[in-house]
Amino acid sequence: MTGAATRPATATTGDAAMSIEIQNESGVEIDELRTQRLARFVLDRMRVHPLAELCVTAVDEATIAELNARWMEKEGPTDVLAFPMDELRPGMVNEEPEEGILGDLILCPSVAEQQARTAGHSTTDELELLTVHGILHLLGYDHAEPEEHQEMFGLQARLLGEWRHHEADASLDDPGLSDPDPDDRA
Image 1 (spheres, one colour):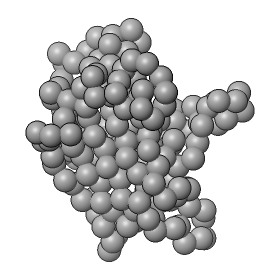
Image 2 (cartoon, rainbow, N blue to C red):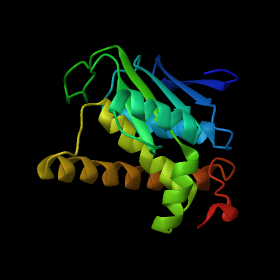
Image 3 (cartoon, rainbow, N blue to C red):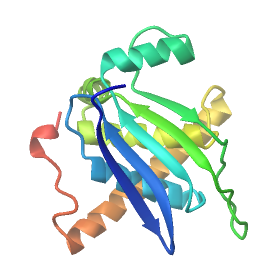
């Protein structure tokens, strides 16, 4: 992928740094810092090692369709693809989580925008849902079976709810942190 607009972001968790790189190659404006904060929030909630690495890349429909065909053997563009690297899993309470590379998350903002319109919410909300969904896939969650679907989508809803509550509280402390675009509403 050439001509990448890259914004590396390093999330700090305690004394250690979690590397979360955000790249926007989609041609569509996204809030890279908000995406980075969301990813850090989810990884912290899932007790992923603070030195874990994650790359989130936003791409156009042609690129994600090519990746979807190559790696998933499916035709056409999709909303999100997850490519795990070191097969990290959520950490357990009182256990030291594994260090490593979580993987790559590929988002397609133009597909997210279409889905947001259909769902009746903002593109930002849809991109947040897809980011959480993709991170859960990177952590080994799936939704092929009914029990898996229930577990993954329940966790996804809980994490999104906690994130939105967290962001609402943060915006009260610093109104510049969370500035939803009223034009982004479907």
